[in-house]
Amino acid sequence: MSTVSVVVCSHLVARFTLLVAALESLRAQTRAPDQVVVVVDGDDELLKKLHDRGGDELVLSTGGRTGLSNARNTGLRAVTTDFVAFLDDDATAEPAWLEALMAAVSSSANVLGVGGRTLPAWESKQPAWFPDELLWTVGCSHLGLPASCQPVRNVFGGCALFRRPLFDEVGGFDDRLGRKAKGAAGCEETEFCIRAQRLHAGGTFLYEPAAVIHHRVPLGRSSPRYVLRRCWEEGRSKALLRVITRGVGQPERAARRKSSLGPERDFLLRVLPSGVFGGLRAAVRGQPAAAGRALLLLVGSATTVVSFVGAALLSTRRGGATVPEPAGLAQP
Figure: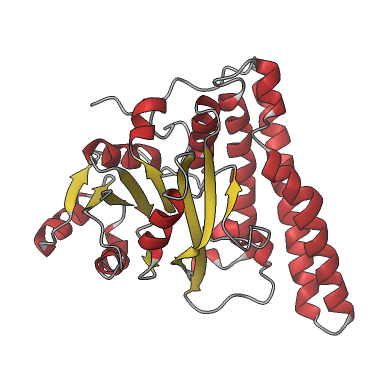
């Protein structure tokens, strides 16, 4: 029988109660994990509370505030199971979450990993002006993703499962990407999935909406200001992603054909127009909040594009050499 570990990364003692809820949800899985690893990134008080709690999880420390990518790589170094899953520390998994992920990844040897569906758990309730197309800004699955199990370019790292040997073959999460103490940038799992597929001919990742987690959305993220800030950071991350993935594992021309930004183009050409025009139609029919959703969707998407173009132009002026090499999975 295949073995599987779950890695949960955390960096704030203020989220201890949420972290414990995440760990308890793993204890309630219909397919119990063989190992649970908790990685603390730079919070000694949180590390002490976890040790004092006396749970059966393996608790590790990064030794400093190093960012999410390095925290995940720290967990990966401790995992020896066939598969490894990741769960956000402020999310709870439904009981069949891990079972659904394992079933999907076992459907074919070509499946390198599987992502699940992340539903928002609003601290109050979803604001009427918040469009479902922008749920990705609060770490949740957005409108426009497949309704059934389908191949995707990448999974989202807080709700995903991978074949563990894959990381030994292609390297860990790129620590030039991913959330750090300052900034809400991401894309580390996107870069990893692109790299893995380019180095594994025929390899694919799946999105399995039957594997569900509930991700807490605090009041501080329920504001247009936060959404637009997250859109701006995403544009910068995607520009950096484009630089990093240019030609990885393929000749340059072929790499352009297998574009790293295909889903983003699909969002702009299909999901965005549908959401904007749908919101305007609903507003005309007597739903005034729908106009706000359409406006934020349009402004948020424009913010992401402007940020991406600006960062891409800056990279071009610097000759593309804007970042150092990643640390990878080498032992510290």
